[in-house]
Image 1 (spheres, one colour):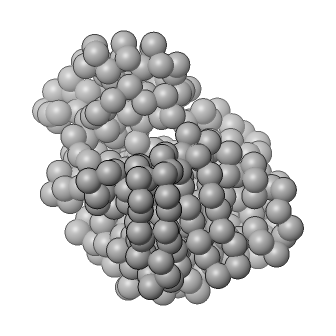
Image 2 (cartoon, one colour):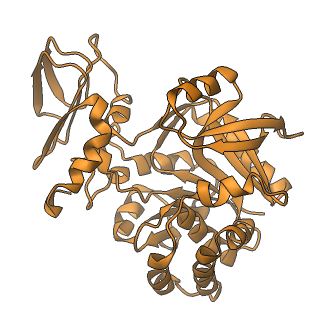
Length: 361
């Protein structure tokens, strides 16, 4: 069985406007110490699989930008989506192509949204995930981040019994979508739950068989892509015809949740005790920066008088942003747009973007 790795990089990143735009979404913006999230994700998988077995699933319009962001990535391994159809189809697309190339392909699914350290711990957990699926291809390996606080913005995984011979892996009892604060506090206090990381290790043919059972409408279209790839031709034309019609659904809802209660499949979870940041909003981006004594964080020159907990971003590091008496505020400046908002309302940036003219999105 050969190991592969796929990075999902299809998000629009509207909550990180005005830096993230339709022409340059967040995963391609070099705003993490001069590097993009996709570039960092590409480096993360370098020690897991050979270069020829690394894939990226992203919008086809960004193909050249993706190739530039991930050194060594082969053009045929950019799985171009003509339109985003959520994570089940990104995973199914990958499974269809890999199963056509390699009957026993096993692949890990990662995302371009995450910052994960230390690398050694991440790699050790991934090796356990691969070993689980190599030993039993009917297994779906998932990864759960050790919680640091009762977050309500993440899904949770409940730990079951240990998987013999694969410590620290456990059987997954259930997935829980974004609980309320009281429930999240109970989960974290119990020690029996981890944050659902959205990372997996899967056997390509097992994935396709499971989609056939749980989501037959998706399976029919994905198999057309598989058959085109199996003929040894570029499946791009078939993808362009089929992909927009695939029902839009997440991999957790469509695959992981029903698989966790299906007797013919086994969902296992590898606890991952890492520093994990899901960079999906300006507050989470701000957490990647060092804070001054007043809690202010910035990627450009700033001057603050009586301001606390202010996050400042600029596409021009030499541009100075000055504030007086602000608290819990986000300021993002680009050459054609500036965002100023309360930090606790940062999730509403995506609603703001919807009201803007297309030229500014």
